[in-house]
Length: 102
Image 1 (cartoon, rainbow, N blue to C red):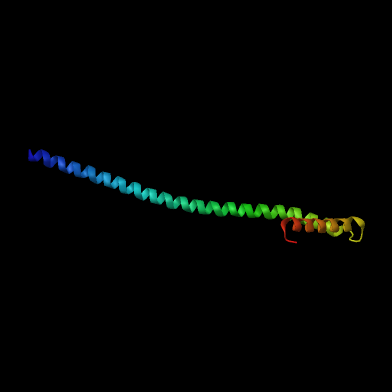
Image 2 (cartoon, rainbow, N blue to C red):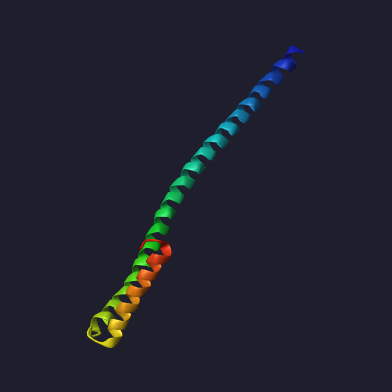
């Protein structure tokens, strides 16, 4: 009878050891996966940030440059330009009055 129990104990110990090995491997794998995911997210965030910056820079340059070029080519001493300047000033005063900054 002791031979049977002796033969069962090593197999129980090997099963227990195997389960410990599997659980340790799963924990280590999960930790490695978390670390890899954080590196990927960091890299992805930098990539998306750079794309957003480049896109907005390109759009703003593409809008501001032609408008500035046209604005510089319009003569300043005429009724249309004076009307634009006075209208912009009136709009600024009205916005300040509405926001209570006047």
